[in-house]
Amino acid sequence: MRKLCLLCFSAVFLSFILNAEDQKPVDKEKRANIMRLMKLQGMMGYAPDANGSDPLLKDLQKEQMDKTHELMISAYDKYLTDADIRELIALFDGPAWKKFKRVQPLITKELMSASKALAEKTSGLIKDEENTPVSKMKADPNSAIGKELIKLKEMRTSASLLRIRSSLSFFYSKSEGEYPKNLDSDFKEYLSPLPVELITGGNKVSPVFDGAGGWFYDSKTGVIGLNVKGKDLAGKEYASY
Image (cartoon, rainbow, N blue to C red; front, side, top):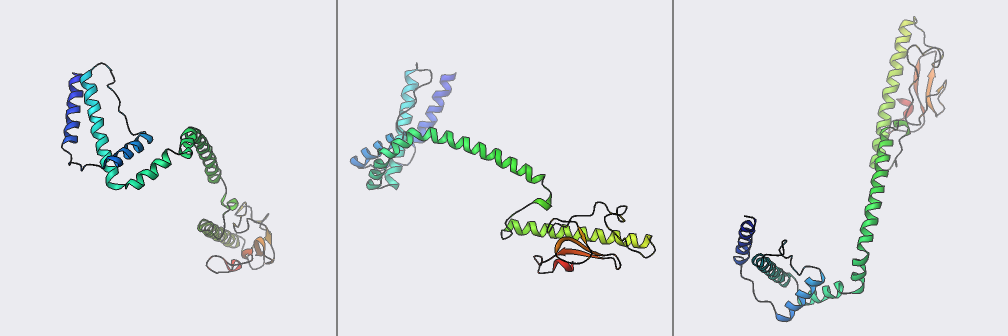
């Protein structure tokens, strides 16, 4: 049964080859050059019957491969000139290519090892980045990623400032019109710890604006803002948030 299946497959394959479009004759000298090139490329030869015992199957397999070679020769002839073939022969038969074939397994092995190491390192960096607070994330501010990171920090800082102001309003209403004297001690019940502004990464509180980072806070008026100099990506002063 196995032989019958192989014979059927062989017959179908041969039918495909024999019914292919007739190929024009290839110049004898060019044909020899094409065959030499194919041999240098390792594209000549055929695999014998796996059992090594059935002459019919061996003959069929050889015939299949011979037909395949003819199709390949025709394709080379169609798309490559004789000059092209000769140049390729010089390349594949040259010392540089022969050396490359010798060292190719070493190159492949080294590349695979390097790729594995790079993948492991990248995986580690991604994992570290996922566990890194936004306040500690860094990127080139002129790059697209850097600008997106700055925008994220500005948005979160603005949200933190809103939280502080909301908590101050709640404190004011509960304290009969007074604001906390000190946000580090008097304010703990309402908001602790005090959020970090992500522009400079600080959360210290200054009674005046000096641009040293963190927040500036006036306990008499309840005014609080960013103690950061400069403008955001939209051109708005940080101090005016």
